[in-house]
Image (cartoon, helix red, strand yellow):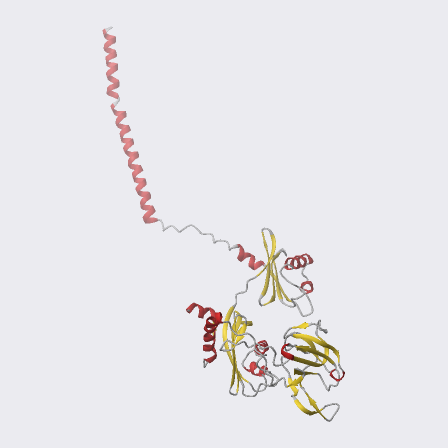
Length: 439
């Protein structure tokens, strides 16, 4: 037993003595592994920072162009214009635009456009690559532009708002042969001439009152679309000088008054036509062009083209409207204060003119002709008061109502502003919005 026990003791000691070497080997291996790991990490850092070239940024993909830009290059446009005596429908057909689009365009525009009144214009028909309508633009006039576009609810038409600039301009001129010629020389259009003459229709007979050397001034609004002149606005003030006589008109609440607030309107117009030349002035003795001999002529003959409209010179009642011997077709009007006016040689009577009808000043009562004893188209105009013929050129008529007392201060403010424009030495224009911004 003891021998076996001793043998067992020897067996216990031997393992303890032998285990020291394996543990020491493991420690060495761990040190080598750690050293190798640190070495590799350091080597990697050296290579990354000092050996490899700098890294370039990742390639960027250029952004796709905006859908609108892509679409714009793929659009197809057909342009056209509507000729006189034609129509938008016919013009679109001539451009070989499919009927389905023509029907859509006309139906969408109908609530906005009166095709019976609007004549002419230009348009643009814009489609995509598949032939689908993208936009239709119709410019009936510089101020009437309509667009049809597609939205989520379908195609919709609308009138575009046109940006406009209003300029206030002073125009001056001098009569050489006629008011038309003088206004044209000043660079203005006939519409301004007519508007100017109508305002002064109660003060000046432009057939016989104007003389060479007469001068005029007009302060008027002119409306532009960009650099394109569109139309005239209202005349704000005007002046006409003939010799020592000066007539001025200031616009106030749609009417025109002189510097003192007196109305330019009178009960009677100075002439029954806008413009013409007088072929025969008032005379109590003249040779009749057809019957011969010296006969009194109690009126004024206004030579004018056939069918020129004739105005009633004042409010009144038709007392005669039929053929009257040598006067041909004649209209006679009875007015207030015992006045009667006569209009002879008419080609025909005005709409609705018959005996007993009330007429207003400037209402068309007939048209210039050459009926009766006449050598050519003209109007024989006569005026009588209390049964006696008077010279209509020299007659003085009652004036209209002046500015009311309660309005005088406001009128004077407008008058003073306009007098500055009229009396200025230079001819100039000025944007109204710029003036308003400074005030």
